[in-house]
Length: 532
Image 1 (cartoon, one colour):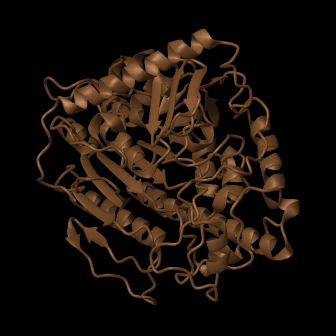
Image 2 (image 1 turned 180 degrees about the horizontal axis):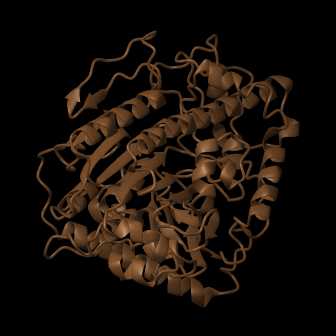
């Protein structure tokens, strides 16, 4: 593994990076929640994301970045550099968190970094008391964008927000981020790590009225046409290969509210399946179009708030030397549930009194051109946009990187670029990190080396070695084999034709699973101090 000094001395970008060698780079990790792979404009979407597009135009886009398919485990991967099964941090994985688990601030502080967090948390240890952040605005309520009932500042509970207070989660998360950055600068500055975790565009579909109005009249063509147009743009951009899979009309999360109940509680415009757009009634088309407009509004507002944070970095003179990484915690969600305060069918769509979800039709479009959704480990559930922007250290502008990478790689990358070795900070006797440093790929494509990538969420399983991916959906589901070098859409199942490869990869998956569980179960449990 290259050290940071070796990286700068051997890459083509060394000359431009020299200005950063004497000053440690800052890190800003921006995490979206349930945002589809192709939602942003720079990934082929029709949603307005000018700030993300500018970051991409002046940085890199990774085309094969992976999450864990679910909110909590993805956040654990980012902050620990380990697969969630290894730290009992998959929300569906029972067990104790090993005492050797460390979080990003605890790796970076010895390297001279101060760490901050604003936004969603969804983990079992508090950001400040448990994970080592200097300051944190922690939004615990994912059911309400306008009136959260549970949020904390540096571990202290804040009053519940009342309707009419002018609060909107996406704006508040950015407000706290800007405030913390100002405080960091006022206290003398120095290198920092900022973890900016938005709740957008996770359900419920809540957005500011002016943002919804921005998309008035859009998305009337429906999800079929939207998928085809996105796919065409993505092919032209060089983001994807293979064909566009058909809609999977009977695939949806088994925990969804039953279709008849959805219609009864929401209205005749609700649709529970990803059926052909032409088969919908006029009322269904109108509500579905409106839901996508709200989803888009939530993403555009997030993009605007990201712009405010970037403006603050610019005012501090730190934008050039901040490694900014934008990712999503999983693919778009096909979930359709009614939680929180319930749903008032008479309320304006997108308001705090409504509780709508995107559903499998538009989720299929958001995940174009991949199959399935959040919680599955087919490509639609685990493929994440990944933008990396660092003017002081990245020479290529607007280029693509096709190296497979994973959220477990973000912590090793920060440690590497921050002046440590990837193994530094790992307690004695603890297993090494699951991720690798992405830094070599900042200079050129095709250089990241890894043995494999592994997934397990609910009963969904997958392993990837090179371009070969073995994947299974549901309890007892059969293994499917795909050559992702030719077929990212997972349309040509080669399992029947290559049983030997299936057996090889299935054995590797099981060996990895058993190893992670054994290491976790053999470790002493982490204490309760700092737990949520």
